[in-house]
Structures are given as structure tokens and as C-alpha cells.
Length: 475
Image 1 (tube, rainbow, N blue to C red):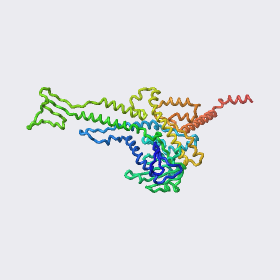
Image 2: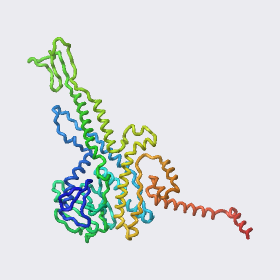
Image 3: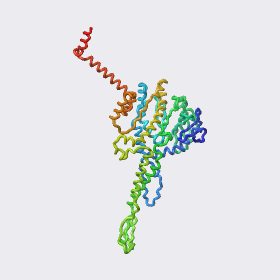
Image 4: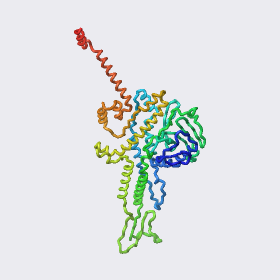
């Protein structure tokens, strides 16, 4: 753990901010964390985003070539790699449900109104690129909780120094890139109070609400992270991407070189003007002219060539591409050889590393989602028993790959009697709300019974006479 040299500010090896439990930060200490975020962490965040967008370092390389052949090609593997992984993890929205049907109804309505499934997809994408994403909850004008995600470039959570490292405060700020970090302005949110700051001035926040009180009773922000190290999924392969860009550019340079290769003419005499100069533009036509190199040799015409390294370059490109996917543990779903083997078991082996990576991320996201809904439920419901229902929430993630629906239905049928009906239905990715599906099934059963009873009551008398005769004989 490092000291930031601003009061009691600390930062861990995985770049989590730590402050003593039960204490309020001074404005200097708040700016200590902002300084570290701006001067140490932001450069990596921005570099990651630039590489995702295809703005690689080769574009800044100087042009030192005298022949002006200096191609700068970018073969961006990072963006499709990240998009494939995020689609694999969050392309199918997770099923989120509560045990109590009334609570579940309110939960699903809140998720829909806040477009939470789309929001979660963006949170997952941001966590892949930056290593973390910060979600904060706020009260809307409708007096209901809402949420949005924020880039870690301008927002962070400070944790206490206990073993559990519980959230102590949430800081979000604004800063013009042309100004110094001491000019930042923003908000600090504790579990009980909100504060605002601008420059070195700190005061209670009476803008968010008149009393500056936190309505949730909890720090209203949650950190979603890709891994415990808070590292991007592609941060370790940036040097491989740089080398791939370099090799591709060199290959383009070589092609351009052959297009511009010099021609030579030996022991051949061209027509001359009155001054005895050949009638030919040697410079613009790239010709080396030597009419009398060796009187005893035959005329010779050709091109000056350097050794062809095409095979070596192709091997290097292939090696780099394989290394990029191997080091990120993400399968290259676009590889032509990927789908050659139709065996389901073989396919599972090819996806095993990526599946393990996604499983680890799912556990961390599930933990963060529970904390997020714990905050949301504080103002979404009116009484304590309802607010505690966050602990009953269930989250079911489904990996986004082509599936055999009939096999999935068979698997769900085979689970009958072994698990609850809600868990059984959650195995089907096209069932978005298992609890609502159970209610619909029960409703249809009741309607079928009602229709059957009505059908029996409408039978002609002669079809019911047998039953009446039996009764009379008994009497």
C-alpha cells in the first residue's frame, strides 16, 4: 500500500483508494485522491480507450525514411476482441428475479424503466476497457432511484481501512483538460451526508436535497470490476498489438518499394540530344543508366530488388495474432478453423479459457449487483421488510453462443424435481422473468380447469343421466 502524501490518503497495489474508517476527509485529502487519479491512473485509462478506438502509437511515430515510403497501418485486434468477449458475457441480458411476486413485479418495472439491461451491457464494456466501472444511484424528480455509470477517469470510490474495505465515500468531479486538477469541482457522497466542492472550497450539498442528507443510508455507488487487479482485458497485449501494426506497415512498405523499384539498363545506348545527354527523364522514371559497363558483356535490363521477406512476415503476423488471443484467454470466434470441428465437447474445450474468465467476472458482477440493489431498494420501497428483499434476488447469466434450443429444453425438463420451478425456468435463456412465467403457467392451468368445468356443465342431460341414475338407485 502506498501513501499519496496528502494526509491519510492511501492506495493499494490494485489502485483502490483507502482512508481511515469513521473519519471525514479534508479538502486537501480529497484533492490528494483526485491528483492521483489525474496524474497516475487517467493516462492508462485514456490509452486503453484509444487502443480500443484504433488510435495506436504507430500513428505518432516519426517519418525518418528518405524515400517517403512510410505506411502506418493499424490492424486493430483489440476492438473485435473486446466486443466479442463483452457480447459473450453480456450479449444475453441476465435474468434478475425476486422470490416475492409483488417485489419481483416492482423490480422488473424498475429495470425496464431505467433500461437496466442496456446499462449493464455498457457497464460490462467499460469494465473490460478500463478494468472497472463506477455506477452511482441518485434520486430523480419522480422521487424514485435511478442510476447511471461513470468512467473511472472522473469518478472513484474510497474504501475504509478495515479488513472488509467497505465503501467510505464516492467522489465524482468535472475538470477541463486545459486546467490543473486543483480546479476540479464535484461532489463527495458519504453514507449520511453529501458535500460539494469547487477548487479548495468544501461545503454541505443543499442542491441535491435541502438538508444535504443521503436518503439511502449507504454510499450510493458501486464499483464493477473485471478482475481483482482492476486490469483491462487487453492491457497485457498492447505491445503485441504495437508489433502487429509495425509488421503490417512494413509489409505495406515493401509492396510500395517494389512498385517504386529502380530499373537498370546496362550496355544499352539511348538516343542523345545535341549536348550528348540521353533523351530520358531518369529521376522520375527511376532508371539507372550505364551504356558502357563492360564492352564484353551482353546488354542487360532489369530491376534492383532487395531480398523478399514475405514468408517471414506472414509467419510473424500469424504468430502475433495467435499470441494476442492466447494471452487474453479469449477465443478468436472469427477464426475460419474455429467451427471446423462440429463436436460439442471439442467446442467447449476451445471456449474453456474464455468461459472460466467470464465465470470469474460473473461472480464479481453478481456481488456488485447485490450491493447496487441494496442501495436502490432503500428508496424504492417504503418499509424495512421490503427493503431487505434485495438479499433474495437471484441472478442468472447466460453466455451468448449459438445454442441448441431443443437440448436446452430437454435439460430444463430433466431438472424437474431436482430444483425449484423458478430455477428450472431460468435455465432457458429466452425466459426473461421466471417468476412471471410461473404465474402465467398457473394462470393458464386455472383457466383450463375452469374451461373443463364449464364444458362438463354444458353437456346434454342424456350424457349426465348415468350419474343421476346411479344416485337414484343408491337411494
